[in-house]
Length: 148
Length: 147
Image (tube, rainbow over all chains, first blue to last red):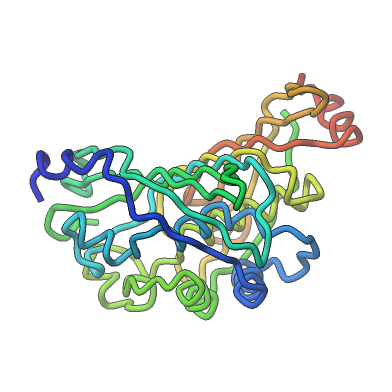
């Protein structure tokens, strides 16, 4: 995808999505991040990333399609910025709004050309109050296979 | 600076698969070692959110509650893979008030231990966190010289 086409995506609003953390998924997540002893009523704060990411109105594979990148192309989560406005609750259905906030093409000595694409996602409750704001930046290598 | 007690974790393939399931993440780079190597990566990629989760665990253990975390900003410098032993570390760099809440600005990082502790590390992620702390913790942090 050429840079001009990519930059034209900035400001694109993702379809509105929804997400509810189930008790089962929450328990599985706690085990997978080695926090089995977690005994709090609110969801683990890692859900400030997981809930908006999983609930955004564009699945991650469709997002990759949208930015013209194959799922097996080695894209990575490069940066995260999470602002907690309210505790995240288990069993509550939240709305997720989002847009493509920025696009940047860079050149790395080891990695070659890569794109940084940032999504701005908001998890909001039934009263339309923000619960979490999440900026997630993905690294999309655009060159041939990296050298290291 | 005041040091936050560090925590250790070992990355396991089964945990990566669980996170894939929870996130409905079909990216094969998490489970296909041959693909990972072909992309120049040293192994299957543990999910970034899991790495983030290890750092958050350290902060919860220190501050006493998940509701104390107000903000996190992290940049990933490298990947973690199955079998890696990771250490989450942090230091308080500043205390400030928001209303009556005492907030600690913390520098946090996750490193891969390259041998027994002390034999070298590779940086996985680094960032900052803002955490609300209790009166007792404030006294401890101030005692260490952080103002």
